[in-house]
Amino acid sequence: MAVLDGFNLARLERRTDWTPNVFSLRLTGAPLTFKAGQFTKLGLLDDEGNMISRAYSLVNAPLNTSDMLEFLIVAHPEGKLTPKLQQLQTGDGVYVGKEAYGDLTFDIIPKQTQNLWLLSTGTGIGPFLSLLDDMNFRPNCDEIVLVHAVRHEKELVYRYLIDQLVQQYEGRLRYLPVVSRDSDTTHLSGRIPQLLQSGALLRSADVSLAPEQSFVMLCGNPEMIKDTQQTLVEMGLNKYRRATGGNIIFERYW
Ligand code: NAP
Image 1 (cartoon, rainbow, N blue to C red):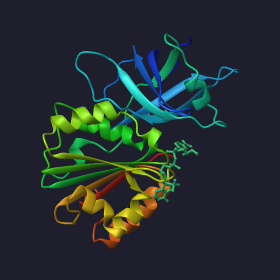
Image 2 (spheres, helix red, strand yellow):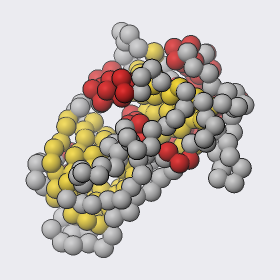
Image 3 (cartoon, rainbow, N blue to C red):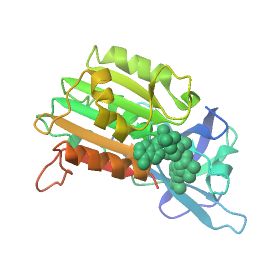
Image 4 (spheres, protein in one colour):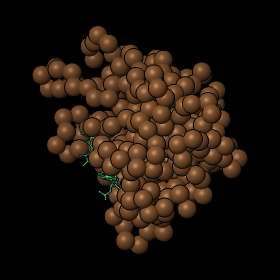
């Protein structure tokens, strides 16, 4: 595979198929300097030799001991890249951007934050797993709530890692799965904004969500982000800006 400006060439170490359209790629061989919670580009060449690349968040935290990079991806049948990424086999080449970007990072969380709320849909849980798993920069808040909203229970990925994190945080981390399209789920059912409005999410977490003490990070479906932000503003929280501070920061996934 050709050398391309702005990209390193990685090899697929392992593909994990969670559902027929949700999968993870573990890559090695492409060194990347990044902060936990950031994203970079993954790319492949099309049949004409043109690069097709899209942004994906790292699921793992930066590691001192290896150049392993892991990404959580949902395949779009009509997409130009994800169906190809989904067919990669161990040893296949993938281009990885040389830079990482994104604000869902430890250093953006105000130091005085007591309750950190991490609200995600679908593959948007990826950056939060990276953030929580960074041994060097563990959020120091009293309470952390990780919400993962998916259509179906089978899309509640990385349960083994989340269980480990819950143990490591020794009572400070709560994991709240939300399922919207399985009628027989034992988890919270519905969508994040409505569950915030009804109080169900706050009751389940038993953690407060208030402007003076909370910081909220959102990642995933842009409509979820729009609707949730509106709900949070109605609850008195404000969008975060570097100059003025605030309580809400987000990353849209498309
Ligand atoms: P999703 O449609 O994002 O659903 C994930 C969860 O978000 C579901 O529980 C869903 O609830 C909820 N949700 C949807 N709209 C919401 C809103 N306005 N407010 C609050 N919650 C909302 O599904 P996914 O499986 O994670 O992603 C797959 C779809 O996302 C694909 O069809 C694809 O089009 C799109 N996608 C596109 C890109 C891209 O780069 N173009 C990347 C990732 C995903 P409901 O079940 O009630 O809808």
